[in-house]
Image 1 (cartoon, helix red, strand yellow):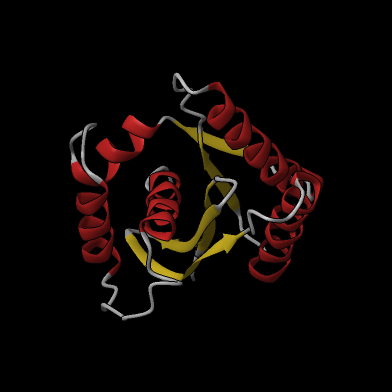
Image 2: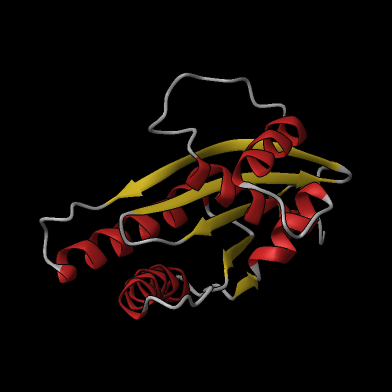
Length: 163
């Protein structure tokens, strides 16, 4: 009897929001899909936030995850950048919450440590480890396999490892 759990991971951002879907079945973890939600800089903030909300809602409806995980916000010294990140994250957060999910949140260093064993791993290291863990072949589609989408897969894996 399968006890397969589907996990959606979100790496929020205003320009690019990464998303990744993995499964956990017993001791096995596996890749389902990943991608990036992109917004256009020339669009209004309202349009961009609604786009993120709508795309995240569509992902929840499509994959019907058992759990959803998201990276916690890292506030940097540039307030304007942090504010935009928080707004994008809130849009994604609300889309998920509207579907009745609780959201597991992970600090960036905890995600890196969960995946690579080091809380200070680089984006390249995350990409490499996620590919190995999930046995993902390299596809030359930079619209799908980006650091943003693999960060989201790392977030989803962090949650999957808790089952």
